[in-house]
Amino acid sequence: MTAQNAQFVTAHNTHLERNHHTFVVRGANYWQAMNLGMSSGPGNRSRVLHDLQQLSSMGINTLRILAASEASQFGQAPDRIRPELTQSPGIYNNDVWEGLDWILAQLPHFNMTACISLGNFWTWSGGAPQYVSWATDTRIPYPVQWDHKHKVFSGGDYDEFLAYTAHFYNNTRAQKWYRTHIRRVLTRTNSVTNVPYRRDPNIMAWELMNEPQYIRGYELELAKWIDDSARLVHALAPMHLVTSGAESKNGAHAFKLMHASPYVTLASCHFWPLNWGYYNATDPTIHSIQESISKMQVFVRNNAQWTCELNKPTVLFEFGLMRDNWGKWGGPLDAYDPRAPVTHRDMFYQAVYKEVTRHLNNGFAGAAFWA
Image (cartoon, rainbow, N blue to C red; front, side, top):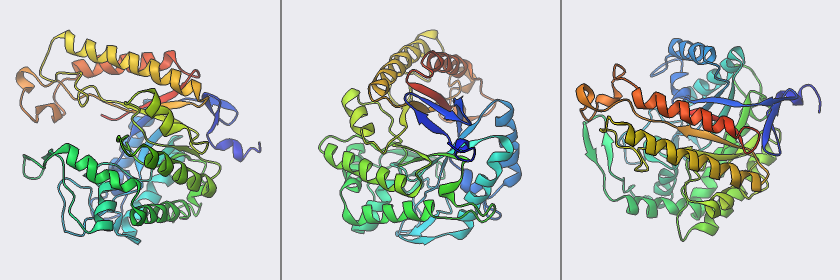
């Protein structure tokens, strides 16, 4: 391996390496990066530089960021990133592109790499349901979610949303537009550094999608989508890792189905105790957080075993827990107040890092917190 190639993060059995040394992902999710990196509009480059400096001082060496957001043809949609990168299939907002360029250009100054997601299953960035909406010219049946603008819950049935979005995996037009987006991103040349994305060693991995869902009845379509997409990414950027973006919450069979492709070189998992019903946010006692920690430990052990059976490394690319939501901070939005304590979150984060560290180089290659 040449010295230049050694700058890329590579997978070796169940661990990662960079510059001939073991590389451990000490990551943070920074999903709003390309919009904050814009030179106008919602851009806030001084904030980004402050954030990167703070994260770097904490030892963070990897950012997981998004290189995809899709606009609705029906006008403004609830709780969606704006402005969107893709205005309609094949039509892009150049200001957002340049925001992504600028962010990537900053990473080497802070000794960071990026895991870049090429899509999202969820509607907060448009995502897979927006591809289905474009392809069928129908409105997305949004699941119940909090509308931050109007301060109310809106939306409908979650199963209806899943059934609608599952068509992304086998809709010919949606797949064509998604693959076009992959090509546009990976063949882009950074306007700041003049380095093509696919040859940038500061990009660690390409993620096919944030949290593609394992949906019964669509297993074969899901596996084919992962293999086809990962093959395309690998062909365009052979020096970069490829990961599915899976939560890996549906057991061994689903995990292996979503990571079996030889073009998927890095496995993925997420753990969300509140979303998955393990944590009671209004319970100040130790019982609720202890159950969450216990469930997490089993989850990490299982994922370590499954990824070792595939002889691939995995990263806990998302985990998080809200702030204390009881007593003085017991209101529906109080847990989002930066003044709220983080009693249970601190306990949970310490337990996560301890458990992942136990499995480093024997399945796990690191972790990235969300919030």
